[in-house]
Length: 288
Image (cartoon, rainbow, N blue to C red):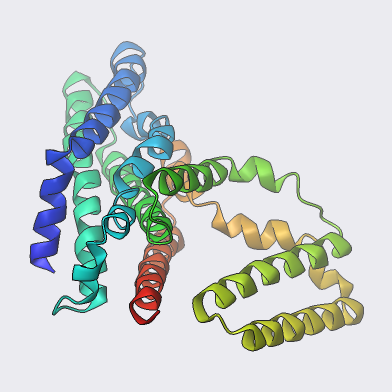
């Protein structure tokens, strides 16, 4: 795993992808830092970081798009599939290299609260916690991008799909307000989500019988529950999907100085899930 990590980390800087990501994030955040903290005198660097979230929408797909799609296109993934290390270590090596690239600007960000402190009042605890959560959020997005990269051999498709998913997550709260709150709308949403999950099961197993059985059983249970207790489906989509508003964990800290431990657990869980899904996607190719 260490050899893969070193190779991937080195490749990010040889191709200048890592340098471009780091420079872009530092410059963008620096502009906000000058405007809010130094010029306007706002004492919270965490608020400045919240303005840099949009950089992740473009920057994260840039560093994740080539993680597996390039290997697949160049057929060098066969070397990984036959390597004397587990696929889990291969995936973790690549993922830790991406996390390191994301960590570099965040380490530099640790100097900014000290600059604010030298000019007057600063809230170091809130600022450093927000930097740590900002880094974790970047790692969550990287895990999602890595998984999408493992599904295609086209770097362009990997970039666009990751960009699209991260844009949706960025606009998540606004999109939730457009969802129906009625019980019938909740049932329709559940059936749509069930179909998406079944489609993924079919892609991974290519077992139409298993996929069909899951679809029929899930739909039957959902419809029975709807007729037994419709109130279960009222505001269901908003309540359930609202928990996937990943950026809210960070903005609660940056805007309200509220540290949500469950949100940190959510971040770590999402990372674990997408790393696992990436391993399974590659494992499927090994045996196909």
